[in-house]
Image (cartoon, rainbow, N blue to C red):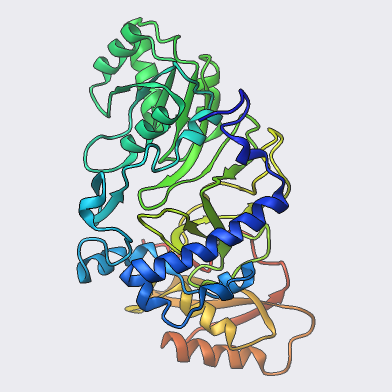
Amino acid sequence: MATQDAYFDELETRDPTEREARLLESLARQVAHAAEHAPHYTALLADVDPRAIEDYAAFAALPVTRKSDLKQHQSAAPPFGGLTAVAPGELARIFVSPGPIYDPEGGRIDYWRLGRAMFAAGFRRGDLAHNCFSYHFTPAASMAEGGARAIGCAVIPAGVGQTELQVEAIAGLRPHGYVGTPSFLKIIIERGEEMGADLTSLTKALVSAEPYPPSLRAFFAERGIAGVQCYATADLGLIAYESPGQEGLIIDEGVYVEIVRPGTGELVPEGEVGEVVVTNLCHEYPLLRFATGDLSAVLPGISPCGRTNRRIKGWMGRADQTTKVRGMFVHPAQIAAVLARHPELGRGRLVVDRANDRDSMTLRCETAGAASEGLAAAVADSLRDVCKLRGEVELVATDSLPNDGKVIDDVRIYE
């Protein structure tokens, strides 16, 4: 529950040093909990002593669990791949995401922690929220319902589709805010304008699940709607959320976020784009170092709104850049393995191109100072050994590669 008008609770404005200390303690407890109660982690962490998690570097040494592997885990050990710490019958709901992947929901109010994001979007006790996330199989609508209940809002369970009925409901019930995808809100508004309906009761919106470009933000603002976004997934719930400060997304208090080099669990320097890896502090589904497959980067400093947790730039694309070259799959993890063989190298990017109906690969590698003799040839040998494909190697200066998280850049054009 909100304890003051400006913030959802006192956790949002904690001293960062206090937050980091409490978070590290929570991570160590979560490792112990997962190892004891979730069979997947019992096996994965068999050689890990949770008491040894004394700093974030020790935590970063733990193995990564990848979202891309969830379906395989769940097929091998139905229904949740051994990643849950409670029996299915102890859950409130089980959702089905594309894959299919089964997503558990615990019985606590605001299990997904979306209340924090809705509060930052301006929702308050007594408001009426028009919920246009899907109520069919996937958990997005339930996430918004839980967040609304945590604040004290009533909900119109609108779901998706039936645009004219959406317009009529908003005009008749006069909700204060909208929760759903930004594109559907635009569709509703445009249809409402065509129908001559009064939708001016909508003054706030929390949007997610799609890109939220400045043009769309401006479209809503012109109609008196202050729309902010959040980043959440069906596995983890809320990861980060935007505040009225609108400078990046503030990390949720119920998760720990790392940014790693795609295809690895290796942390990247602050500000560098990499894959978002999240650990939640959820009792029922204790995901540890869960690689989302999304790209982002940490922003320096704290939000101008006064919330003190770290911030990320938001969704910046997908980290899984696997591609096929000459009939062979090449993965970001393979490129990381090539670079790891040569300590002189920094970041690397494999550029895949096509000329004269033949694929080509060039691995561009950053080096500090003058490269040692024979380094390019040695890296080319490693590339062939690891990827089973021949490619060229180009050595470039440090910081000359774009900071966009790309490890494999497929620029092929087929005509």
